[in-house]
Each structure stands twice: as structure tokens, then as C-alpha cells.
Length: 358
Image 1 (cartoon, one colour):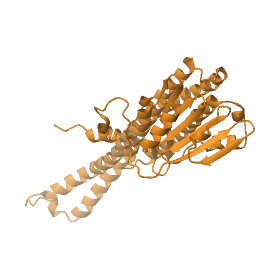
Image 2: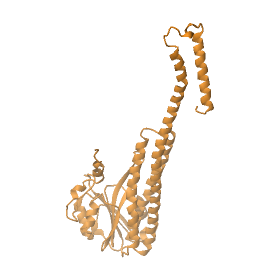
Image 3: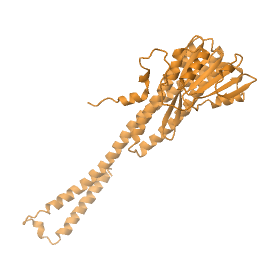
């Protein structure tokens, strides 16, 4: 009996076995091996002032402005504990931040909100989805973001803050919290659009000239869309909780923006589901295209065989070395043989064309 593919399961949950049987709240990093130094930035602003510094300056925290601390790298457990101690973060929350295999979710604590979300980008060269876990924490005085590595989709937000575009400089931490979540969701649309374009190309390829690896591409798309589905479906529930829970950290006017983000989630989910159906149809199209090409080949071979079978029969009869075959003594037997074969060939060819088999 063939063994189940346990390797895929192991690959999907890296190093999770290291966390098994440990006491709740034990902070240990779970994720891809990383040795690079953790980087951070501190952005402080209000309507009239703005400052941005490389590094995390927790001592500059002020209540009368928005404080955004962004940390790239969650494998530094000491830094994680330092930030947790400063903002009195729950030890289970810190455990979730260090575990990069978390399901997207929202958790409410006494004086802070934790949002776990997956940042998605599409690699158009290799046709793969890149996934990174983002942890966003909203407190009364600050917004803290934890990323697995350097590079994100927040440049537009940084630019809006720096240039005082829109309302972001005139509102509080909860709006920044929303803006970060919304920026990640908006980039889902980019990834989904690129996947849709690739599905169109693959559909044309399979319809016109299916290749040997076309079915592998379809299977790869299936896994990619499933990965995107796992990222966006829980996020819908998560944002729904933000809308339903009564928290002092989120003002009523921010609920309208969260509702808009929720609507975007629904739209992405519907698109992903339609793409999954299209991708499933591509598999059937591939099998149909290959079967059609095979039928065409078999049709040609059958027609050729049908034409040459009677000619082979005639050649076989007169190829026998019996002494008393009457036609063996004909002076023009050989030309007659070719004349008969030519008539057979033309007649069968005409019949096949009349039947529209050719």
C-alpha cells in the first residue's frame, strides 16, 4: 500500500513540533530559518508634526500623537519580550507573533487588539504566491507591526503620512490600524488579477496546443488558489469581529472604513471561488483537448489502414506461389494489379470525403 504524503504536511507546518508540549505562552520562534538582523522603524506624527527614524524608540512614546513602531523580524525573542513588556502585551499574543504559521484572526484583550493577517504577493516569473505573516497590534497609545522580513506593502501609507495626504494625520491610532489592514487587502486584488491573467493564458494554451506540463500548471494553480483561500476566508471572520465587538480602542467612525474592508474581502472571496472553478474546468479542458488530438491521430491511422487493407489483400493473394493461379500467365497482369489498386484507392478516398471523414 502506498504511504500517504506526510512530507507535504511537514512542509506546511515548519518546526511546529518544537512547540509541542510546551507550556502555554512559551515564546519560541516557529518559521523559516532566519539569521539576518532584525530592523525596525519608528514613525510618530500628528496634524502638525512628523518624524521617522530607523530603529525602535519606545522611550519617545507620547499620548497626544500617533505612534507607529514597525519591526521586521520576529525571530529575535528578546526584542519581542521587550516590546511586550513595554505595552503589557499578553504572553499568548507574543507566542502567536513568534509562530508564523498562525491562521488569520483577531483577538481582543483588556487594553489592546491583536490582528494576525497574511500579506500576499504574486511572483509572475515563477507563478507562485509568496506569503508572509503580519501581526498588527492596536493599543491606546500606539500601533505595533511585526513582519517576518524586510519589505512590505505599506509604502503608500508611509507616503500619505509624510506628505499629509488624506485624513490619516488628523485621526488616531485606530485609523492607522485600519489603513494597514486595508493596504494588505488591496494588494490581494493585485495578486488575484495577476492570477486571473495567468489563467487566461493557460486556458488559451490548453485550448490551442496543450503541452505536457499544462496539467502540472493546473495542479500548481489549484494549490496556489487554495493558499489564497486559506488567507482570505479567515480574514472575513476576523474583520467581522472588529465590526461586531464593542471596543474602546476603535472609534465609531472607523467602523465605516472597516465595513468597506469587509466588503473587499467578500469580493476577493467570490473572485477566488470563481477562479477555482475555472481552474477545475481547465483540467477537464486539458483532458478533452488531449483526447481530441488522440482521436484525430487515430482517425488518420484508421483511414490509412482502411485504404491499404484491400490493396494489401490483393497483393497477398497474388503473392502466393501456387502454380495454377490463372492470372500468373497474364502478359499485362502487373499493370492490371496497379490499375486495380489505384481504383480502390480513389474509390475509398472519395467515399471518405463524401462521409466527411477527411
